Amino acid sequence: MQTLTSTARAASRPREAECDVVIVEDDPIIREQLAEALTDAGMSVETAPDGQAALEVLEQTSPAVVITDLIMPGMNGWQLAEEVRARPRLDAVLVLFVTAVGNAHRVPPGPVFLKPLDLESLIRAVQNHVGHAEA
Amino acid sequence: MSEPVDILIVDDEPRNLVALEAILDGRGFRVLKARSGEDALRCLLAQQIALIILDVQMPGLDGFATAELIRGTERTRHIPIIFLTANADLERVTRGYAHGAVDYLFKPVVAEVLRAKVSVFVELHRKTAQLLAFERRETERRLADERTQWEAEALRARLEREQAAAESLAAANQRLEVALEETRRALSVRDEFLRIASHELRTPLTSMQLVLDNAIRRAGTDNLSAEQVGKALRTIDGQVFRLGTLIEELLSAVTLESGELQLHPGEVDLAMAARATVDDMEHMFAAARCPVSVSGPTPIVGRWDGFWIRQAIGNLLANATKFGAGNPIQVVVDADPTSATLAVRDQGIGIAPADQARIFAPFERAVSADHYGGFGLGLHIVRKVVSAHGGTVEVASTPGAGATFTVRLPRQPEASPLPP
Image (cartoon, rainbow over all chains, first blue to last red; front, side):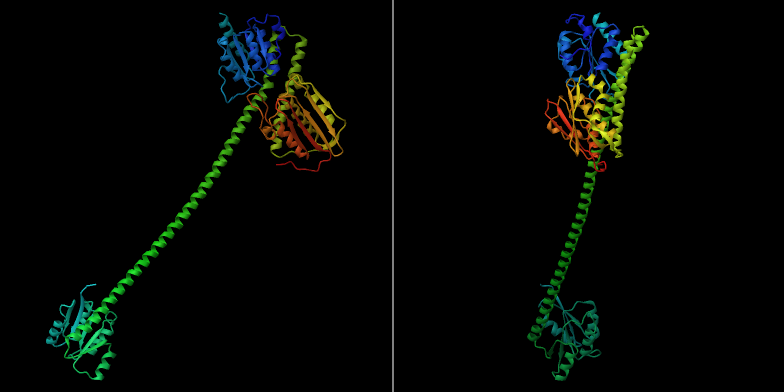
């Protein structure tokens, strides 16, 4: 399994604990900064650098939301979304896409947030779903 | 041919006319009668006559005078004349021939002799008419043949012209189709490039924006340590460098494509250039968890353009980082008296043999743009720069086991124009 950037935070919780959000992003800075922003907004966060690593994280937790980049080495965002949909256990998971590609030739199967990111609306979208999932 | 033939009998004696008519009647001839030379001439104007039987001794125009007038007229000069005469003296006969007679009969007329002579002339007339008709038909047929042939040739020529026109139209159409396809491809390459370029430029921008957003929010809650500020600024510094490098790469590509690369050769130490480039890219190696080593003798001095050489080394290192993230990268420089080499070895995903030639072309990539970003220009720029220095760049790779790019540069390169 690839390293989890938020291991410090994740390590304080038991592995099987529910987390709110999994962030999948190959750019280390964006991954780390997104995790920081969502953590500051009161959510528990796990991260993964690509789709394969994300699936390993999802083996052990059922988040309300997965935020994934589209273009990544190995398993990319489109492929990860298909894998999530193929797992009945992850039926309730909302997959959000973040991408720097303004005109992707394949439309992602879910809400898309363009980079540079409007953090406020991204956080609001995540919070809405996390609140809904907990209610 | 049983068409009735007209015979003209000319005699001033009505008895003679009746007698002659009786001899010739019922033999397939139509007998016309004239009682004087003038009568005969009038009749000849109105009828097609096959044979004239002409009495020599007549009041008014006698037989010879009438014959002379008949011979003098184009329409009638060919009509055979049999003279009838009572006197068989030689002088008259000679005179008669001089006036165009073809035969003589002496009175009293012997019926069989007259019929026999008439039959010969009538037969001659019929044969002549047949021959003329045959000739006319032949001529008409030949003319018709010629016209058909001429029309066929005209048609063939027209068809050939039309076919040539159609062929040249088809060729022009083909050229247009090719041009259109090339334009479509060029447009789609450009669209793909813009798509990727926007991705590449937005990524460092996003990093900076997130760092700033987080720092500003924490500063607002007095939750920002001096250590965190320092870290944020260093991250932003790294992203500014990355953005600058990307813009540099774009400008380099534009410069190289417009053929405006002017080399400014000077004394350059290749070993030092490699180390300086590695130092500049420290952020990138750290982020990709790639330890980088530089080995080889130093200095390696040659006459090169230092700016473009560092650009080429930077592009090779950026590729090694991108496709060999998490693994070490080795840079090895070496030299002999005439040339210098620089090799960049990664332990990344490698390049399939089929892709190894393609990756040096502009906008080409061996991997899907859905997995790896990048302009697709890095190796293209490397090859352009190295070629401009009279050198070469080669790749050796096994898929899954990394790749080694080797640049070989002459140390005193001949002045070499940039390839188009």
